Image 1 (cartoon, rainbow, N blue to C red):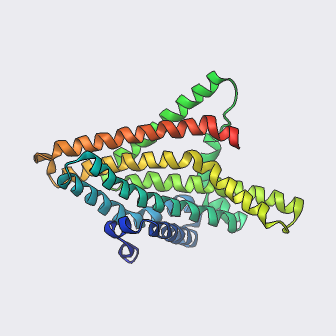
Image 2 (cartoon, one colour; image 1 turned 90 degrees about the vertical axis):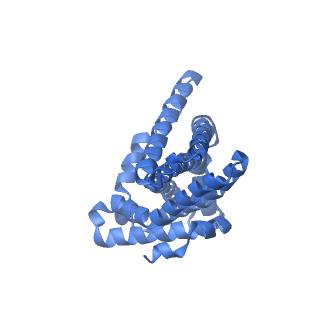
Image 3 (cartoon, rainbow, N blue to C red; image 1 turned 180 degrees about the vertical axis):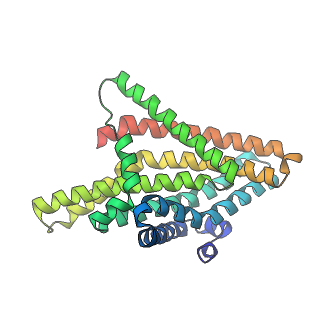
Length: 283
């Protein structure tokens, strides 16, 4: 297909920043088509269309990374190689997120309402303020951490069953984060416009910066964790499909996947700590 031919894992590892524009393009095309053809269900259809565009590059990445497990023996070297994939996949995720932010801010309110309907419902259900005593904050930390672990398990499961299935969970999260940032920017820009007019451009730039930082602070390590988990599930999935479980290298593949899972859990701990203790203090 046309979108599939734009990039491959080898090229993406050499120029990971290009994946930002790929993600922005994939998401924008998905948004445009969903609004034109499936307007009433656009909030979900845009996710599926974006996922369809991402599947080839993500699945080829899983195969590429699984192949490295068969060639590279040193675990530190192998992790460095996997990190290349994580970096360009993060650029892909950020591109999708920024696309959602841009369209949320610039599209008419009525269109935004239908385009991000399901995402807004999700934000409202999880957007509880973290406050109270240290004991209450710790309880919230545990709750958020285990909720993120549940999402991580879905990413691993989807990657294991569908190969590139984790991209669905990650794309959905990108649209939710994009909607949250877009709503923050749009609401605060409206307040600035009504109070000081359009004269102070610096104030609007500050709103955008704060909006991005507020959700990126804990969102980036959280998404990195999902990518590590999805990569682990995808590598095992490819190994089974190619019957590499019958080879002597399969133990290396399992060990590598387990290390990726440990790394993902560590990132989730950091993300939950930042969300509960750092974000409320700064914003």
